[in-house]
Length: 378
Ligand code: F6P
Image 1 (cartoon, rainbow, N blue to C red):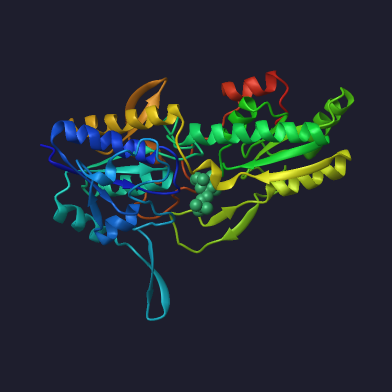
Image 2 (cartoon, rainbow, N blue to C red; image 1 turned 90 degrees about the vertical axis):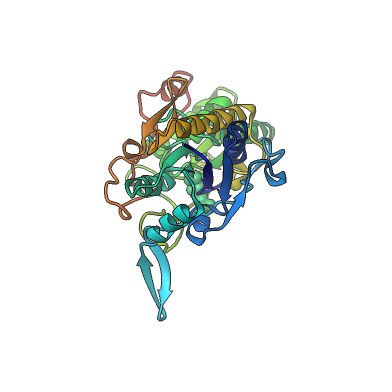
């Protein structure tokens, strides 16, 4: 019998975190189940820092609110945690302490709201006997086994609005306007916003680009009387034979992504200016894509995910992730989601090597982009 549950929001924030929390909490209230939140994701789990959410002021009026009312931590792997001992940095498995906290608090289920890295730790906790249900989050839309993650639609909408604005300034000044969007290893945001925002070129991590193809496209437009172009570049896009643009490297150990990406937009703008003779400007959209209020789509998707997660808990179906498959709510085992990461507490989390869902060349978005002449750099 389910009596008491806890929610844990982990990883980079997205619009929709609170809508999922609300979906779970409201279902709890309907069923008379106590609902708590761990403060700052896995950090709160390790430190046993919780807050009660059902029938409380703190969790009221949160549907449209950006961020997460219970916070979230990034680059936090409790299975391989960075600590200092006698002036030395060492990595420790502190998962047992987390399990003790869950037991001591009497939580019958923990909901893990997060991306690939978060769900990998969730899978590892499940393997150690914790009742876990995951909910797929990330603006990059790259969690395996689901058609869509919450937060993604809002990010695309923000990018689309930016493209609309860049369009008019590019047209006025006869410039090439480059927009660098997020998307570390998957180009969903770049591709979908390029279609929604009428961009001429979209460069994504899945297709190593040839800058000359972009130049050809821009020149063709110039010859046709359009001396301006709009280009979307995913932060993880790289030229053929080149490497991804890393801005900074962190040292948080295994199972977290230690690279901070950025800079490819500037590089592309510079090259296009030199090669076309048109002035080019880059705009990096950054955290605008993650913050703020969720779209109607994300509010509904997040609420559906929250309600489904609770339904699964009531059915005692643990060790799964809520997903959307062919437009329908469903669930899949976490083991399937994190796939190749078999080893507990090691290997890759949200990194290039993990089981991320990337853009495939037979995807409708790729076909549509090609059909209407959006240059994908190949
Ligand atoms: O994974 C989501 C994401 O938004 C990526 O697209 C981006 O590279 C990353 O988070 C940035 O995260 P942070 O700067 O918060 O570590």
